[in-house]
Structure formats: C-alpha cells, structure tokens
Length: 451
Image (cartoon, rainbow, N blue to C red; front, side, top):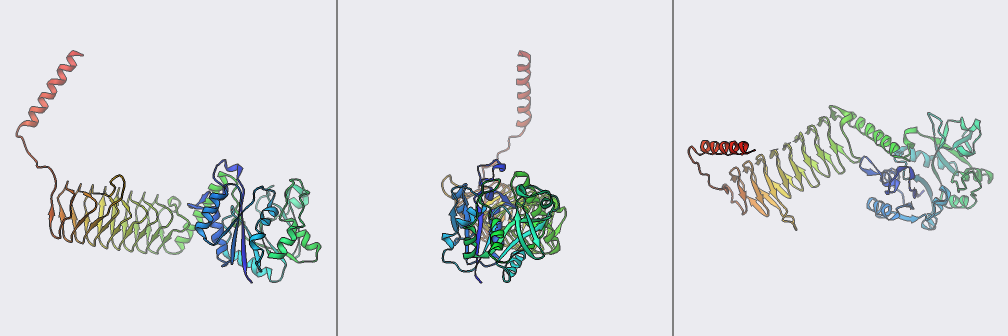
C-alpha cells in the first residue's frame, strides 16, 4: 500500500530561546527536520507533507532542499497536534494509502521501527508507537493497553496516579489509513486541560466505532525529543555516540573517540586512522586507509586512499585529494584537486587550483585566487616543485616539471621544465650591519639621556 508522511514542524520551540524554528536547529550539523525526513524516506513514500508554522519560509526552504517534491502546508495557529495534522488534508485529498505521522523534533526514529508500524497496520486500523520510559516525566501521555489492544491514550495532565505510574509511554507517532485518519480527527474536541485538539483522542474515537487500535514498542532513545538547548546538546551527544560506535564496528580507528565530531552524512572507510580532536562538517568522504591527524577540520570534500592530512589542516568545500597525497600542518585547501602523490606539507593556502601528480608545494605558498571581485584558477602540472613562499597570482599555470625559486611571485605562465624566479635582486653591504647597530644604540642612548 502507498505511504504518505506527515511531518509536524510548526512549533516555535519557546524553550529554545531562539529566532530559529525549533526543527531547524542542527544535530550533527544537519537540521532536526532533515533527520526526520530521511528516516521517513526509508519507506519510499509517495508523498511527504511538512506542516510548518513558526518560521514557515525557512522551514520550507530546508524541506525543499532535502526533497524537492515535498509539500509544505501552513498551520497559522498552533491549536494542537490533531489540528496540525488536519492542515495536511487538502494535500492528501486524492491520496489512498497509509499516513505516517512523524515529528520534526524527534530525529532518531529508526527505519526498522517505521517498517514494523506499517506491518502492524496490516491487521489493525490504527497503530501508535510507544516506549517504556526509564523515569516518569510529565510531558508524555500514557498508553493504556488491554493485551495487544490500545484502549486509549491519557495525557499526563489528565491522568490519575495509577495511570501516571504506567511506563508504556506515547511517542506521538502513528499510522492509519489516510481517509480514516482525517475522519477520526473530525471528531476530536478540545475539551481538556490545555484546550487543544489532541491527536491521541482518535484512539478512543476509533475504539468507540468498533475499529482496532494497537501500539508497538521501540527503544526510548529513538523517541528522544528536543525542546531546549539542553535537549539539543543531549541529542547531538547521542548521535555522536552512535555514529562513533558504528565507525569502530566498520573497522575505523578512532584514537580518542569522544573527541571526534561527525556530521550526519560523514563517510569513512575501513583502516582509516582518526587522531584526536578532528571535526567533520557536512559532505565529507574519507576513503579506506587514510590517516587524519589531530585538530583538522573537513567540510564538503573527498579524501582518497592512503592520504595523510594534518595536523591542523583545513579542507574546505570542493577539496579533492588523490591517493597517497600529503596535506600537512596549517594547510588550507579550497575548491582544488590535489593529484596522486602530491604534497602540500606546510603553512600553505591552495584555493581554486589543480595540483598535478607528484608535485611538491613548498612552505608558505599561496595561490592568489581572488582579485576583489572574481575568483581565478591556478593550474600546476605534474612533478612541479614550488619553492617556499611562492605567490601564484591567478589565473596562471605551471607546466609539467617546472620549478619556482623560493620567494617568487608568479604573474605569468611558466612553461614545462622552466625555472621561474621573480624576486628582488639581493645586494650585500660589507660591515654595514655593525655600523647600523652602533648608530641605533647611540640614538637610543641620547633618547634615554633626554628622558
């Protein structure tokens, strides 16, 4: 049966104390909403509907960037979860199949859990997702079961002491036939302590109509919600712990796992060694057998097999390292290809450039790629030796086998096998250093005496 996702993402998140919509706060450098969308995408949904409210334009921009076919609808007033889901009605008016309701601030739902919900729907009209809570908390409703029958959901504010002691707790996620879901919501009232239209009311309504409802169970960690900065930090820590454990299981060496920060989409191959205090931003792939040394930072880049990067290196978007390359301390690479066996070992900036195989870039080298208005490209051939403190003023190219003398400013192309030397002529004045020091000392003495 076809599947549609309805992801609730309208809340302001008052406890976040932020102008940013709550669902756009990042976990592992990816908005929470995107985590929820990716979990749902594992089911290959026919439609994805995002219910936005606070900061709707920003939410829509992120949602469409992740899935250009996503439909974003508005909840102008936040009148409860049932009211929020109802905003998706028009977007699903011609849809036939199952709807799964997800939450944009609950980013850790596993694809397997969603699949189990769909499987349970085959024999029940309504399926909710719950978990056994470790500690009683007032923010969660309780799932009242009779065998495998879900009798009702009681919000904590409405629950008596016996019900509050129940550990089986509502996550908020559910699945139901689309037409039935909206039919049930039509009968939800707001006669409760909060004056809101609770989505959970549809359980009692379904039972009263002789329909079947049940709840399946997942691990509590999957339902971790985010309502505050403290929750956000805890969620990020949970993600990092899981991601590091996965890398270790896949054969990656993390010398100090707790110091390595990963993005949601970081890919690292087996037998790679990651030293302490390394940060991976979005869009990074590290192939097998690489070595990443301490205090290096990566974003939107690719590192091939056998490469050694760092310490204190920065790979910015568009950096592409070939096999067995060497990127050393205090080197920054941006939008550049470094071919197999090339070395950029010390204190250099290579931006908007290509460096050919087996070339060596000396310490203090800079590709001068920006003229204040436009970016320009530097092309360095194979087996090129670039002397220390060379400035290459782009656009410029160095042919295969070329060399530059230390301190050279390259302003025009260098043909293959040529030596470029572009620095001021040196002149030595015998004895002048001694005379200069004596003159300066005398000047200082007169100044001190006058003082």
